[in-house]
Amino acid sequence: MLILLVLLAYCEALMHIRDPSTWESISRSESVRSSPYKWSEEWLDGVPLDHFAFANKDQFKLRYFINTDSYEEGGPIFFYTGNEGKLEGFAENTGFMWDIAPEFHAAVVFAEHRFYGRTQPYGATSYNTTDHLGYLSSEQALADFVLLIDHLKQKRIPGAENSPVIAFGGSYGGMLAAWIRTKYPHKVAGAIAASAPVFWFVDSHVPEDIYAKIVTRSFLGAGCNRKAIERGWRALKNLAKTEKGRAYLNELFHLEEKSRVVSDDDHKFLASFVREVFESMAMVNYPYPSEFLAPLPGWPVKEACKFLGKVQSTDEDAARQLYEVTNLYYNYTGTTKSFCANADRCEGAFAALGDPMGWPWQSCTEMVMPICANGWPNDFFWKDCPFTMEGAIENCEKTFGKVGFKSSMLRPHWPSQNYGTEFPSASNIVFSNGFLDPWSGGGWSMTPKIEGSLVSIILKEGAHHYDLRGTHPDDTEEVKNVREQEKAYIKKWIQKAKMRKN
Image (cartoon, rainbow, N blue to C red; front, top):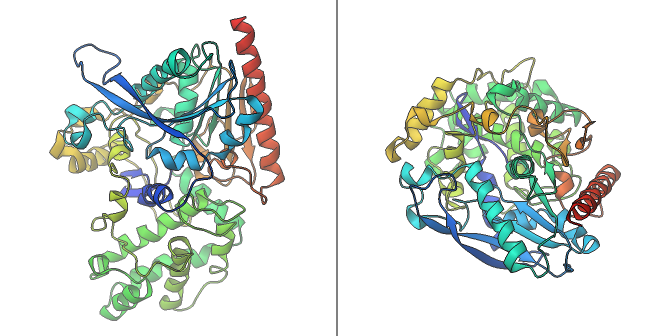
């Protein structure tokens, strides 16, 4: 995610971060659905808060899940590098690891990222000051994972001293999987990095409008009428100009009282709310019903396009088209009675995870990922480019100034300095990306290729880390073949690692 992963217009044209629906669904998946996979929850004690200096001697406990049902002595360890959220959601939505563990006689481990889920180094005060939040970073998390790997091999898993470790991850987790292989190749034998936007940073020169471009491409490819969508944005703006029109929008979208359209300027938050639906639905465009971000039918983008086949003549009908798409995404089950659309007033989705400001913090420090829309002809949104560092700093100071954020903390060049804009010495990584996934625009490659033992696989019918999901009767033949390829690479990495040990 996924994830996984998704967008929220944190401040239009200044910074995009994960959609709150991601956090909401991760929390919901833990509490509502019983998981088909079983694990033991365990904790690693004595993890240093700072792995790279000796001034702060604080320590914390790192949560992880483990299953050794298929493990045989000396077998590999399948290690998921945890994302920006509770661990349960990633364990439940990475069925590929569980499906192939018996074949490889592997132990399965999911490691939680520091400052997310229940791994809170300072408990309830972890987010209260930059003196604490300053230790939330990808490089500190990677060092945590290395410490856990040593613990697993030396103490926790019998006979695992020489067990090869294979990293898995999707979205930000996929970035971490790739980076742990490049930074710690002596600890990790190979990595499956699915939908990992490892180059979505300023020094990689990824077009800042490519996310919106790919979203548009996916919807138009599924049969949507571009002009119908663009007409819808104008309709929201027009209707918000009058009291009658605002009343229509409030009733049409079933908006909660605290999120109602009350001025002509309020069309902006409503349009952003609908835009997030397009951006998120493109990510989870799977061929079968899923609940990763929200309960959705199979091929949801195609279903959405059934409402967007032609341009409507009235503002009311054009706005209703956008409502139908929104309702499909947020209310496919028919159980949602109202929507809270104004991100400034709607905190329920943010509160669901318990630490919703973690990714925003990373976006304000090391994970500065320029994203915006340019409108026609690039995409069917409105123009909010260019992304500016000045705007990002202003937004971050507004959000985190009260806990001590300073402009010098935003380091847009750090990812390329720390991890690189190319991987000339890296090996044994499969970068898989879906052609339908907007995040593919920042991946290692947007085309299939092989450089040494770095492999790019593109799924023409793939959305966000589709290949990491568990086997499903309605899987495409393409994803079945991709998983077989990935298994072949994993087998090769394990064999080579064992040969080195012998």
